[in-house]
Length: 99
Image (cartoon, rainbow, N blue to C red; front, side, top):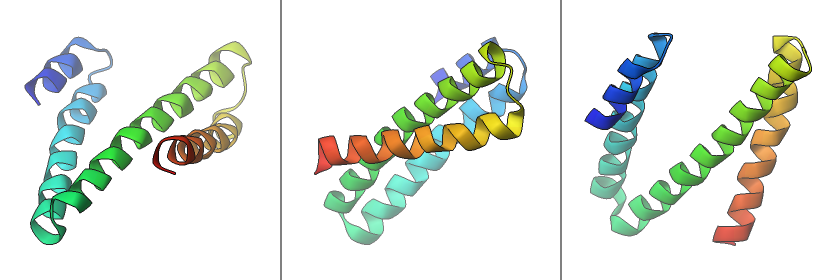
């Protein structure tokens, strides 16, 4: 977790520091609760889902950046259009890797 805090401190704007500092803690707490309540198998599924969701979020973020910076779309248009990318990547990864 401290590696994410260091990464957040190195980036600009400083608002990233909170994002990189909080996300791993919340993920670990969620996995711990899932393990405690439903067992290791369920926690493993949750962990895989989080990893695939992170890949889909990265694709979404890349698409938003391209639409905003390269094609000069409005923020609303970029985010709504990129939501299709997010869901498409998430479902494709789920089907390809998890069946």
